[in-house]
Length: 288
Image 1 (spheres, helix red, strand yellow):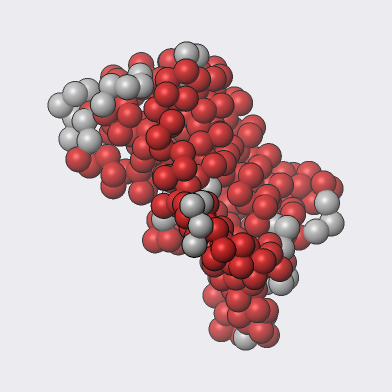
Image 2 (cartoon, rainbow, N blue to C red):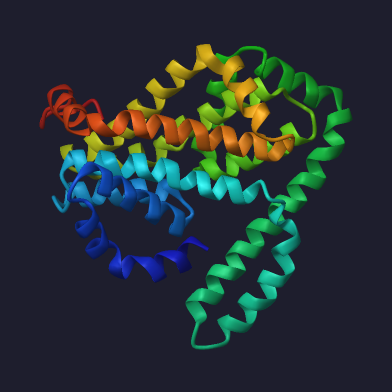
């Protein structure tokens, strides 16, 4: 799916990004739109590292794009909460027809999307019986007994999967089946946001210092956001619980509210944050 979406969007990506990156607000909008189109904030962060490395974007612009990408991935999570498994077969059929037509790239996108939806439906069916398995409920209870432990576990899971959307879909499934509390689900979402930074960190190893600063900024923003949110998890859970009675939608709303709030708070400080990173990671730094 990502290959098809990148084929559709990458040809105009640089031109659109240059137009929208005149100020932090427009750069953030570029990150949001690109993340929504590619269905991957991880992909956008890696592309942004490359653009900053190539000096096509300034560091402050790159940070703003990352903030927008964090919001853009929330749109994917909202869609995942809408029980998309029922759309798998229709999308597969439409994708197969388009794949054999001049619209081959769009067909690839639809086929990949249908496979994701079908996989999520299988995941839901597989997890449902686990609510009666003592070993599984015990593992979840122990890992979610502490918000810090839940954040750490979710960080490792997302770093392994290289996709916060997939990891959040797993959280939606296990919470909807009553295996964890909403407080624990929110802690896992915070960990998912941190774990998605590791792909960018790996990609930045061969990048310039400017590119490594973008990866470091992505990590620091999500870590600081999680640290600030952890003491407020229970009030936040009460707020999210009041938005809807649907468990899947509650997790999606928590993901959206957190990322939108964190991005709006951090956006005005992009230039200052860029200057701070320039001091912390000078050109000869080997920290990242």
